[in-house]
Length: 370
Ligand code: GTQ
Image 1 (cartoon, rainbow, N blue to C red):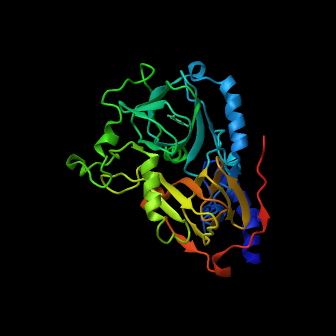
Image 2 (cartoon, rainbow, N blue to C red; image 1 turned 135 degrees about the horizontal axis):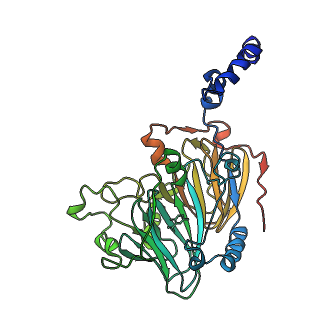
Image 3 (cartoon, rainbow, N blue to C red; image 1 turned 180 degrees about the vertical axis):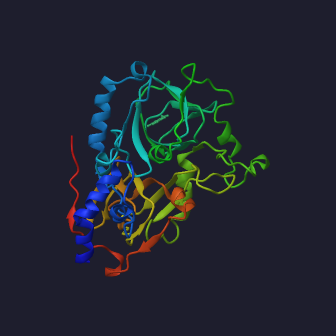
């Protein structure tokens, strides 16, 4: 090996590497260890943002930025510190493939309609009275609701209620960016007006497990909003029995016409961890962004303890060992790039088999506070 290294470091090889660079050519012998490491080494890091910090900054943004002034949404996104250095275009995403943000809309505000090739989802954290209009359907949003905005559909938001509303956005922005497939278009006339009855899609799917016969071949999910009371009912039913050893009681938001994930590139889950639950550790290729909807506890990620409580966001990067511990009854919302990994045949999973399946905690993450 020493011989090999000295060969690569020899003047002859180094000079040649430099020489071909002038012609925009690159030597594979230099690149391969970085390009093809033995297992995933994502630049995205395990990280956690405290709700206190997020909330404080949203309240500051409230004074500084308005959708009227900026013609855009008041959203603050999560910049993974590991990706900051990497992105030459000056912004960092939350994981390698996904972008997540919190969005604040105040009574009387309008977020103008637009459409883009990226797919979006929203998870409603606080407030009521705002609606989104997606592809001409007005959908009212309440706490705990999960909504999808498939790529290419017009969407804008409006708040006619009387208290601030905050939700989580997640989009496949970095993934679409890396493919070069980005298109974006503003709606010509501020907010697209409803073109079909309010809550039309939800009304067509009241039965839950039956689909209208016209939807046998739907590819875009024919349901746009997944109400909290149904998610909660599903979790209550599930939690009468044994939990999944890694994820507790967990359900996935699906496209009811074909059983696939509701959003083409993003899998969204709600998982319920009863007080005292301690999952076994495992790792998988897909990276996950968590939002603590309820409760408190901690997650051990590659030996580091991340304490979480209601409102916090945290990232489990690709291939990082992780296990969850609930200190009170907790609900974790999460979104991941599982469908991307599965479709590319990149998904792998590995159970941690040492120490009864629990990691040794080596240190504790120190979150940045406002
Ligand atoms: O609300 O439509 O955080 O288009 C990023 C892009 C939110 C939205 C984001 C978007 C939106």
